[in-house]
Image (cartoon, rainbow, N blue to C red; front, side, top):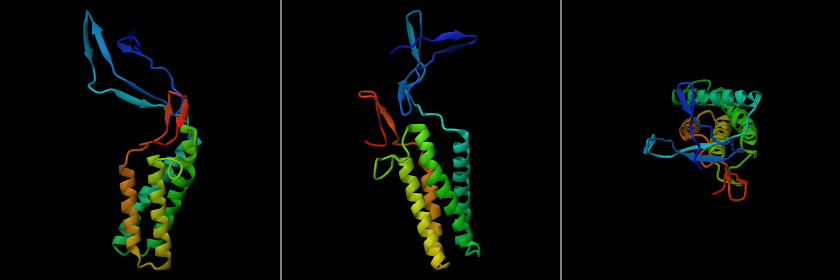
Length: 189
């Protein structure tokens, strides 16, 4: 499909057709003038559409996920230096991650893409799966440190896992609309 650009003031603009949540468009921009065509970008651009997530859900989700990472780093340092607040910081990290990723994350997913959970065992959504791995890491660390504060290596491992999880881009292998049948393929390949 070709969409013509129109002049709006000093700019050339084109409006892409709206898509349902999980719909994707792949496009590129070409400018033509007097029989000459120039492609502005080498590779096609892909955009994925999502539903509107209410701010009263999204803002707390971001807040709790941010503080989960902040406290994870602080807890890892506390474990490394054998500090006295290891259990306290482990508990806080785990609580922030449970609320942000375990409770609010699925609600954000539902608003954005139509399903609460699309990770294992239901699908392959990497965001859900990496959240699950991080949560398991911190719950195990909390359990081990609660039983024996000398188990500080568990907090260091959980902090490293969370850093690795945060380095993976968000929404990789997520929900996609199958344009052939109009169904959302939620995290399945």
